[in-house]
Image (cartoon, rainbow, N blue to C red):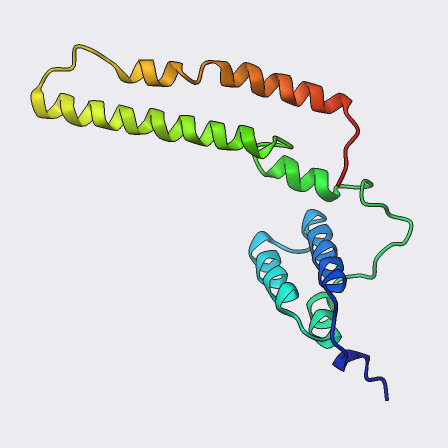
Length: 150
């Protein structure tokens, strides 16, 4: 009797299952919710049997297919909204958006309370982010020419 399903898995085995689930999601075989659920269970798996159950309904891997062929990671990135942006730029955009929105809401609240909306000072806060679009475009263009690594 094969006892493989009882053997403990390694971190590399868990990461391999996670990559397979990611490829299945990129191919449209799993929706985001099911992918998220299976991914969490893959990283919690202790035995091969647990990992095997997570991918049992997926077709076997095509050994001729590489990580960069087909939709794969590029499809996941393109669905994410900010394709291939470094985390620093994502944080800067988020901080600018939060600061601009907060200042606009404060201005709106004060204007409604006092009845005086003459000076639109949130514009000064919003203008602090003026370089962001240019920097973002520059980074995206520069990264197109650079070799991609996973």
